[in-house]
Image (tube, rainbow, N blue to C red):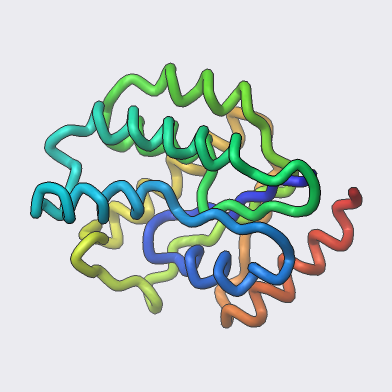
Length: 177
């Protein structure tokens, strides 16, 4: 099995891209957005910012669960991976040790596809409230986390979903089994 990640700061087009890649293999949705949505339903609050340690802890566990539940063969594409938990911990200024341990224990294939901040498509919604400056800072934290773990990052073009799908498919064709 090969496990690939599409990562990037919020609002960079990851979710639409991962959805469009479903024909390539099994896909897994973004754990952070799932947790925030579940929290909103349970409490009426649209943010977990007031409990960052708990959010990061749940994010790590949700990411582990997604990793561990992948099929035994084929291609798997994740909307974010365990290294993203490190960036979230750094952004919230909480201890990232548990995220680092989990990310070191569960590796993904290279390359990791990273969507750059793209102001032209960035929007806020009821669950995404970061300013664009915050998006850029989070992107830097993501790059640092993935590079620290030794991943080969490939930046996605700022283009249509179809162009991005074709770009990833081309890279996967050259990545081997």
